Length: 621
Image (tube, rainbow, N blue to C red):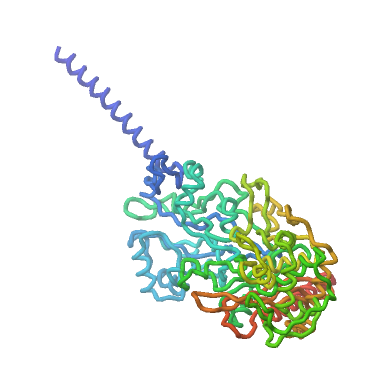
């Protein structure tokens, strides 16, 4: 009997041992599965929608240290394929490991020499690491670029936690932030409002960088890509390298991304113009250069400079793209007034006017003391006579004036956009989201005084430098209005075309001015440079035509002037249309916009000559 009980106890012990062993095996298998299962980064809870790490990520975090090599965000190219953003180079990655994990004094010394730093500085840096990071000169500087020889020698060192890895730097060395390109920043509220479904599916994260302005914002849904490329360095419980795993690089599964956005910018010309206006002291204003053949934006400069993350002016004006902001245009609006008069047969090019300096009503006077005397309509445009255009404006019916302004593309936003949903986004696309509408009259009744003041580009009239430059293109195209384009195509990572953004003529405009009217205005602008207010431009490398303007305004209650010049060149075969705004200048100061126009025209002429020479050399070879 006792023997039977012993057998029963042994049998039960074996049974329990088997069960316990099986449970332990399941537990071990579960741990292995947790360790090796890929992490789903960024998935958020439906309830909290907060940045919380799921248990799988926590499991990996216990044994790995990850470093982002590439955010996966798309980059921008100029019209020639030159990179505006994005470059990949070899950089030194530092991963935190236990201080005794394979340290070698001789190799640490050699690494310090390769990095041109002191060994003590290097050791202190390594000992203070809490998270992986790249070797940088300063906290906010990009990782230091290693030469091929440096990368080779570092790769031969046997130092734990030290690796040479390819780093994708979004902003190239020497890159100046550009309002047109914009910037990225963290914006979790916007993501919650606009990308909730993608957040729930783990396709986006609340802490990721999103477009905050410019093309970065308008094309964000295409630029954000499909995921980051990261390097994970695996450690054991003692923070020592985990043998057999070491380093693992994880890339997104879709090789078509990130995309490349080919812009219409000429980066070399853009940068040269930026340097020029800074040397010439343009404190506030803008420059727009358009290709006269299709209204493509070749260069767009706004000042003050864009400094993402910084406020350098009390009113935040450095964040404004002044090329897209509508302000008082002054006398360049006389082109619209003249067009309305010609279109409605209310004035003749050879009609004689008398300017004695005072209009006699509405407090209007001519800018020239004593007046211009007797002059024709064309002379009035050349000399920018206020009295001539105040008188003409009072002849024009409000509705006819509005129709002409719209027909010339200076009333509505004119930048490239789609009326129907863009196939890659499911909604209409407007490339220049910050662009402001132009304006002729504010709401309310319009009397003679309002007409007269509006006719010389004052009162409630507003125009942006982009609209001013495009007005030049419109007149060169005999009244057909094009939509200025900044992006020509979007390509996959392998170079295949994802989408082409073709040149558009503006739709839904009220009519079109006649070729005759366009020709008369071009002749008037030629007279401006030949013997009018733009004579100082005559010595430039290209013969040009254009219109100057000075608009009275205020800034903080203090009288200021907006100085303008819009024109094109060369006369024989116009290549570029240029608009320059020098904003909020002191009254009676020298006309900075006209001087800048001439300098930019010379830069454009030199650029064109250089391109032609290069093209001829290429064809001969």
